[in-house]
Picture 1 (cartoon, helix red, strand yellow):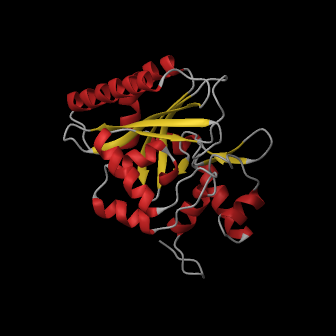
Picture 2: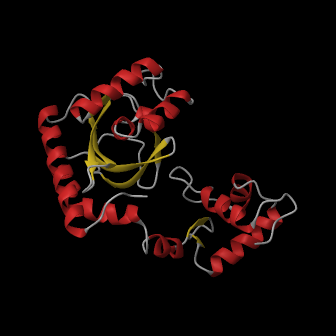
Length: 257
C-alpha cells in the first residue's frame, strides 16, 4: 500500500476520511472533509473521487458528502455487532414500547460506548446518543455496566485515564467511580441521573452471552421527572437481557469481538 510523503498509508488516509463523519457531522463539504481528515486538498479530492466510484461516499441533494451505501453493504456482511443488534432488536422493542422514550444497546470500544442500536420516539426526552455514535463510558449507564463487568485490568486502565465531566453531575473521581463499579457488579444494573444530559436518567443492565461474559449494555434514557417507575423499568430491561442471551445461545453466538 503506497505511502504519502508524510509516511501514512492509503489505508490510514481512507480511515481518516471515513472517521471524519460522526453523528454530529453526517454531511461535509469537500473542504470540511479535507480539514477534519487532516489531508491536503489535492489528496482529499482524489480519495473522494475514488471512494465515490465504489459507493463508499456519495453526495446529497445539496452537494455535500455523506457515507455511501457501499459502506452500509460492507458493514452488514460480517459484523458481530450487527448480528447482536439483530438478535436484540425484538427484545429492545418490548422495552421501548413499555418505556416510550429512548432504548439503546451499546458495546465497549476502548474508552467509549459504541451505540449499535437505538430506538426513540418524537416525544422522548432529548438525548445525545445516536446509532453508531459514541459516549464516554464513565458518564453513561451502559458504559458503567460494561466497565463494571470488564476484567479488572481494563477497569483500572480506564480509571487512570482522563475522566471528563459532561455535566456538573458527571462523576470523575476515581475512588467514587471504583465504588460505583463495585456496586454495579453486585446488583447488575446502573442508574445515572443527569450525567450526560441534564434532566435525563439512564438505567442499564448487562447483556451476557452463552458463556456468561458481558458483551453489551442494554439501557433506557428517560425524563428524570416523568417516567414509569424504576423497578418496572429494571424488570423490563432484565427480561429483555435474558431473552437476548437465550437467543444468542440458540444461535450459537458468543462474544462480540
